[in-house]
Length: 332
Ligand code: UDP
Ligand code: MG
Image (cartoon, rainbow, N blue to C red):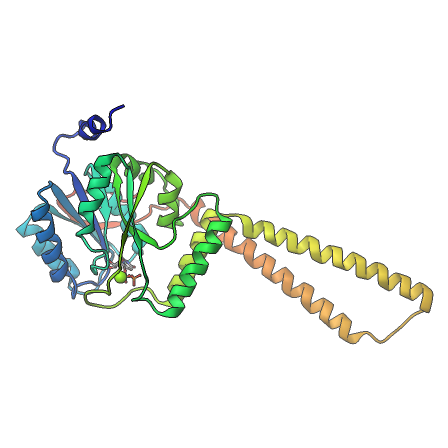
C-alpha cells in the first residue's frame, strides 16, 4: 500500500479530525502555563496544521484550573479535562490519549522540557510512513549525576528483564499515529508504565535526537522516592523475572542446605556429637529467615498489583471538562 494514500485516508471516519492533538498533563503548573501557551501557540500557528491542545489537569491545587478555563474561553482548540484529584502523570496521559481525536497525538510536558519545535520533525517522519516518532535525549547534562546513573541502570535492568525492548533516554515525548493511540487506549491496566506500554504495542518507529532543557518555571513533581516507585512499577509491570529469581534463590539455598546437612551427618557419624555451634546456627537461621522475607516481599509486590487490577476500578475520575464530550471516566 502506498504510504501517502494511507496517511490521507487515515482520518476518513471523521473529516473534522485535526492533524495534531497535543496532550499536556499538568499538576500545579500555574507558573509555567503562560510561557507554555505562548511558545506552543506561536509554534503551532507557524506550523500551519490543524490542531487541538488537550490539557489534563491532574488535580492541581493552585490556579491551573482557572488559567485553563480562561485559555479555553479564548480559543476552543484548547480543551480541558479536570480530574477529581491527583491521579499521577501516567494516568493523566492516558486520559489525554483516550479523548484525543487527531490523526497524530503528541504528549508533551507542561514545563517545556519537551521543545515543541521538534514536532515539525516528528510530522516529517510521520509523513514518511513511521507510526511512532520518539525523541531521544542526546545528553542529560541538566540532570544530577545520581539521576543520570540511576537512569542508565534502570534501562539496563528493565531491558534485560522485559520481553519488549524499551528505548533508553526517551520520555513520553513522541508523536503517535492514531492507530497506535487507539491500541494503547485498549490497554486498561492500572499499573501504567507508559514507556513500556508504548513499546508493547509495537508499530514502525523512528528516533529524533534532542537536548533536554531545564524546566522553564516551577518545580519538578518527581523526587527520588517517586522515581524509585516508578522503576518498580516498570519492572513488575513488564517482567515476572523477579519471581523466577525468587524461585532460584529458594532452590540454591535448599541445595546448600542439603550439602551442608550431609556434611554435618557424616561428621557426626565419624567424630561423634559436637555441641558447640551457636554461631553457625545463628547465621543459618538468620540467613534463611532473611531470604524468606525477601522472596515473600517479591511475591507481595506482584500480589498487590494483582489485587489492584482485580478491583477493576476506573483509571481516573473526571470532575469537569471543557470542549470535550463529558462522562468519560476511563472505565472503557
Ligand atoms: N505531572 C502530572 N501529574 C503528577 C506529576 C506530574 O500531570 O502527579 C505532570 C507535570 O505537570 C508535568 C509532567 O507531568 O507536565 C512532568 O512532570 P515534571 O516536570 O515534574 O517531571 P520531571 O520532568 O522532573 O521528570
Ligand atoms: Mg519536567
